[in-house]
Image 1 (spheres, each protein chain N blue to C red):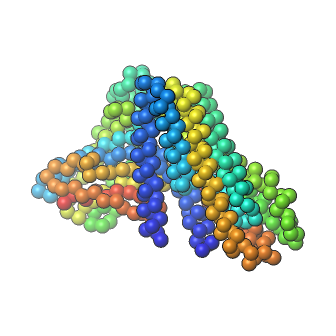
Image 2 (image 1 turned 45 degrees about the horizontal axis):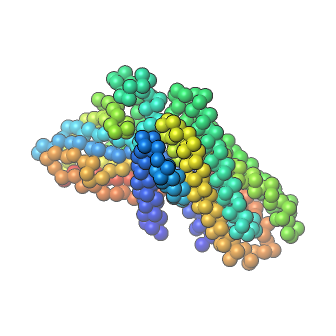
Image 3 (image 1 turned 90 degrees about the horizontal axis):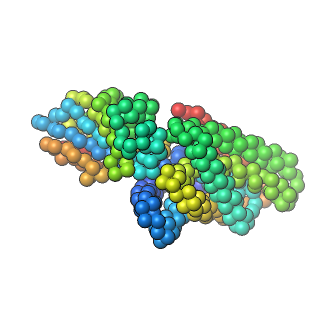
Length: 173
Length: 249
């Protein structure tokens, strides 16, 4: 009992709990079971957003212009490549390399910073899924049914238990 | 067991998600209306947020638990320790946040990450040193009995300090959010409320391990120093893991 308790505590310490929350909004147009793009929008929680805005809204107009958006992409977004952008593409049950995010735009909506980007790929929606989650649990990625916008197919959202972090899975049927 | 644990973690994350949204919108309302009720609501929620936040991994709970499994103690001491950590935790968060905000107003986010990573490394090294110290103490006192009384004061402080010195990003975020909106005192009060909540949770971790220790400890009374040494070794390992995790990316 004691050793189990120690082990649990020990493992717990290695993982930071979420300090940032990101709502994931996927948009996809499916035709004949196929799609060539998924546009993903991250809506970052208001508190984290306030820090970001303070840092990036250099002219202080409460908006992110294209220059500021570029700065965010280079300094804040691209570093997520080390974390696979908290996004995993699964084809036939296997994780495959994520397409490089393109067409990045950062905006502010209701005091929240939003990152939008495209993941272009020849998607065959059958046998395909996306998973969202931060293995370090520093950021909590949240996907809800109402966040999805999938035209021409049905989106199925479920939770994924990855032992020490919690993620969400998006299947398109 | 594993499933139970992850649904527990999921619940903790969900609660924090809701509270996070609620706190930020309420603080913004305070800013618009400056009402006392709203300010008190924010402080109240900050307390609950702290309570739940500390249930998640980190915040020195493991260190406290190891310390109390390897040192005979009473519940009062666990409370003292929990709150000592929470106080240090809050102060370091306040100092870091205000310091970084006013000294390095720009590039905050980048510095924020960098500073917490430096603080984490320092804390990891300190935890390793505490581990060495505990092993050394256990070795030195292996033939004596009733040595806990004398040695504990110093090592307790060391444990509390090394566990609490890493500023809690959760506290820092709330404080910063208040600063950005110009609500300085509300920021400080929320940080205090949050750490009172965290202190309670950390204390409970200590109490839990003392309770376990009381059950199993009596069997090993003569060989207590072995247990203490193992405890020290665990703390040392914990520090090393934290250090490695910090330099992992």
